[in-house]
Figure (cartoon, rainbow over the protein chains, first blue to last red):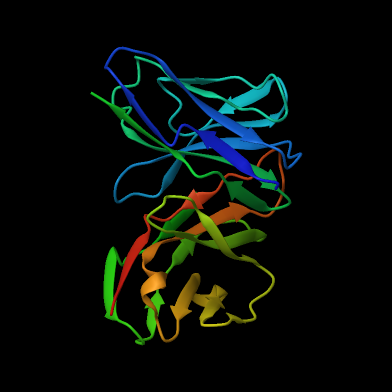
Amino acid sequence: DGGITQSPKYLFRKEGQNVTLSCEQNLNHDAMYWYRQDPGQGLRLIYYSQIVNDFQKGDIAEGYSVSREKKESFPLTVTSAQKNPTAFYLCASLGGHEQYFGPGTRLTVT
Amino acid sequence: AQKVTQAQTEISVVEKEDVTLDCVYETRDTTYYLFWYKQPPSGELVFLIRRNSFDEQNEISGRYSWNFQKSTSSFNFTITASQVVDSAVYFCALTRGWSGGYNKLIFGAGTRLAVHP
């Protein structure tokens, strides 16, 4: 089946550690996105990539990094510089004017 | 600047009641798209509808209907005869109508709908 996969679904880390969230898509979409969702809030854009080897900062990129070495993959690293990393992270890819979302990764940092 | 406002933070209804979720948007673009997504407890965003700025026809899909009014910059969502399975957080979102490199979705804060038996 075509779609977007994110792993793991739940992730726990100690403060000060970097952590990488996986996002893979087999929809052959060029553009991919990372969003962050906090309780009671909508989604905010962290990074996006229009094409392989290219990516741009979104609205809240500080403390995050990404890479786009393959069309199918757009991993997000939450660095120790991110002050409030505990959140729900959603990856999406763009087909036409519609973004398709993955199931999300819930990151908890203690 | 683009903005989406969902003034209703939480709505609670009893099964079979009709419920309307409000969405008001702001944009200076003449071409744009509006979306509704459903987020069940599992967390994944489920696409419900996309509407472009040139199509003001109301849309009905089963128990779901959408009312798009450019004059009031609103794109409201009505669930008729609500069911417990409709319980979720619903997001309204806006994006520019040109690709311009990427299509950034601007989300509202969401409305949490609880449907009780």
